[in-house]
Image 1 (cartoon, rainbow, N blue to C red):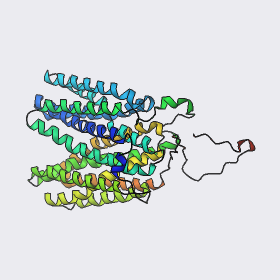
Image 2: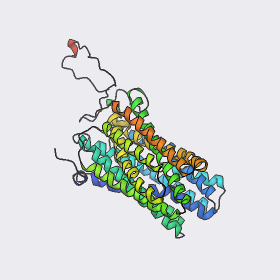
Image 3: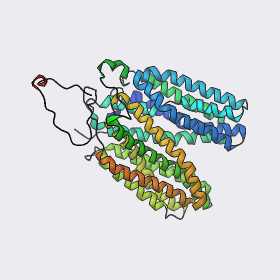
Image 4: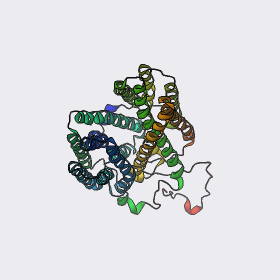
Length: 434
């Protein structure tokens, strides 16, 4: 079979119809958190309150996302997404009303939490659609699809925050928040309208499911624990880099260099993610994982040696280039070890783990920078990269849950298998999937 490429992938019936609106909506998702911070600051004049409201939004989103994904897996995207989007729009409208009315900090924090609880998880839903679309006969193209997802995510977080910051700098913070919600809701509604590519709800096949799948019990416990650890560590890396790069350029008297450094990192990541998905790799994804995390570790160790913003910009080309391939690998491994009926939940839990790591790292690296200087923050990033590398070595033994063409995964327990003695009554009788 010829090497898969993005053009043939998007020509798959129904693929572009769900991928493009999901990508559009993700720009709005990427804008929302920062837009709320700018909005609250523009009205209150304090970053302390803005940070509290933005933090409430992020924590609420991380906690609520897996619960929303559970409903999506059970009842389907087309039934759950529209009311969830309506709730998110109403919550953002409530928050905007509270801010413009000059409400107290407690109400603003509550409004931020309410808006975060309904934030649409369009990335997880798009990834689940790729798995449902390609798994029956084109599973070898899943790494390409997930690489495309990682590129879309990187574009969203490059365009979204820059757009909302530009609007806020021009004195239109309110417009930025409203635009963010509008883009999210519009993209989500168009995605929900694509019924043909939506994964079948678990409720529709309840009569055929003999054992209720679970992410954190039985055979899924070890692989999900490993994947949660990997995403927690990558979140720590993200959070530490945001604080440390900013502190480094300020310590060198070049605060304006922060934006170019982040842009260089993001652009190298976009290129690397795009190139990673262009070819069909012979080695299995668990083999790629230590190579990618090792490259990230090397880059973060080099950060400890740089002594100028220019040198920093050179090194972040390497660290930035490793991130999208890593995110694609995480998605590939998740799809291979998780029952299809709980796949959206799995993607959402991993996103929540990354968000939690980023939040913890922001505080931890801030303390490290205050105590040891910018290199202290880079040391936190290096520790996260080391943890990623060690966990990736464990990923070489990650048990796999193959997804047959029939659609119902047949799980396989890790470790040595013992042959099953079959009776005469069993002869010719196919075993049912567990």
